Length: 478
Image 1: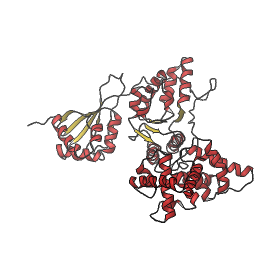
Image 2 (image 1 turned 60 degrees about the horizontal axis):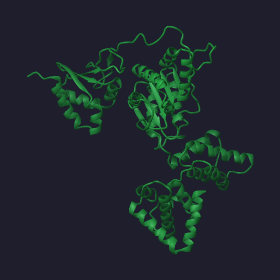
Image 3 (image 1 turned 90 degrees about the vertical axis):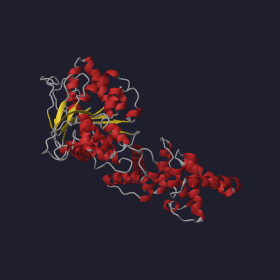
Image 4 (image 1 turned 180 degrees about the horizontal axis):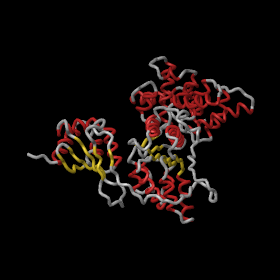
């Protein structure tokens, strides 16, 4: 009995479903439609070029085994890819994977129709050049100080940093297109975007790389409308090989600018160009952005930069000092890292302020000077009290090391300090009991609750202990 493409693909899906998690199956295999079966060649239709690239990069071995299991050792797979432009009336194009190519799917030969009406034969004005000047060459607008070498990697940013480096090594050819980097202010989005651009320029000097803020893009579009040269504006951006758009959230509510960016995005993506986008919010949290644009932001990888942990903050300060050839006592560096926990930009600003204060007043940089200077600096910034900071204050008050606080020792003074750290962490942070316990000697939530009850009882019955609590409270709020 002759087998049909629907039956073969259904059998393939049964195998695939048993080998990957449900969410991955729903995302990457449910949208696929079988098209035809010719001898040992199964053709399936996928929604986009990006979809095909993701399958090839992440599921090569699984697809290879599945197809051979169903169609025998000569089994092969072809893709019919739907054109992504909503106004495109062309038929889907097919990627053929000859048996001689590498891997399961190999390096495909793509017969993709070329749209000859995309560009223009006339000289296209550069929106970054002041009118009247003849310079047409695109300036990348990259800050050389923001390289991968100066970007400190930690658990808080490892995914985004690794993906960014992969993009810079092979722009437009990975599944991370676009790469969407998001975080709160001051955690390194702009630095990472510049680093990607700089690395691309180092690896591929002939590629046209452009860093632009969303505000610049908006103003350029307004000028283009005033000068009646919107087409030239669009064509200029369509010539870019790697476009780095910073703070995309500022396009919110600007429908015409979003529409222009939508067409630029489509053109660049379909032509294998790389897009790097940053935002202060994840795509799902963005307001005022058109759904069709938000869906494209989700095509590639969305990676967040989280608040750096203590070790990463110390490493950032040490790298900054090393770059400037400055030595600073370890306890001062540690105090800075403990005191400013939520914003890398503020952390570096505090370091610069401390060095300037020391230089102008001809004072040595000591822990006491750091306390006088940085406590005032932190007080005037949007400081968020963290568990790390509370532990530092408590340990300083009792003159013990933080490592002792997190050890298993049952010495009375250590246990009491640990209980106070738990008490203040519950009072001043939004962390769960389990998180507090994890930071305070890897204890469970029940231990944290017991510690809080013990502290409250001692406050009511022990005058000296109550004075301790009041003093520590003042220091935490300084």
